[in-house]
Image (cartoon, rainbow, N blue to C red; front, side, top):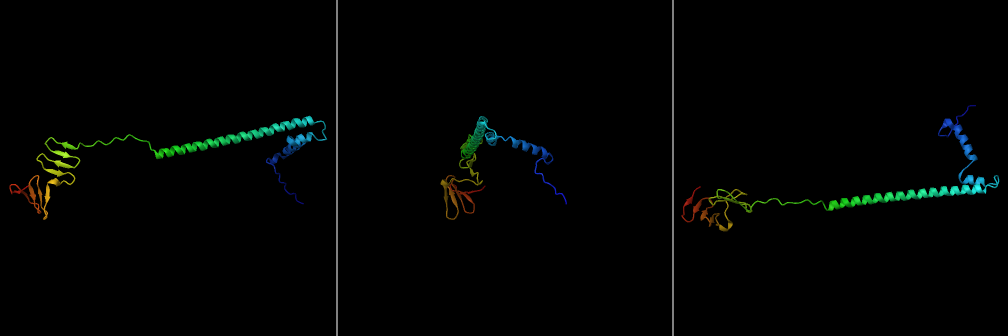
Length: 187
């Protein structure tokens, strides 16, 4: 006949004897409510005073447990409330910053003078981009072409036009004539 192995269900399997002796000693003098009730049994008459004292100690222990639980629950609720308030405050600050970005001072860029005058007598009109040379010729600085005031130009049906300010007739082929002298203008 073979001997089967015994599984010792102890956290310290090598120290099982000591644990067994401690369990027997604890069972002999139970504490808590069971100890109080055991003190008041018929086997130990006249120990009502001990029973009441242990009952009072147990009551204090239960009150302490209840108070500690209540304090811990209150502290936890306060921590959670504080964390929620901090999160809400941070979200509101972030939203306010997003909706109302920090204002910076804005200086309007320096604008050019409406007309810039040159030493040779020419000028530049910065609002209409017209360059006027000292001899009176005008150029559109955007296109680079000679400028003719539209109020002084009479357009003809064949593509020719008359500059009434300078009295110059420009034919459709580009030939220019002085309308006062009738002479052809050569460049």
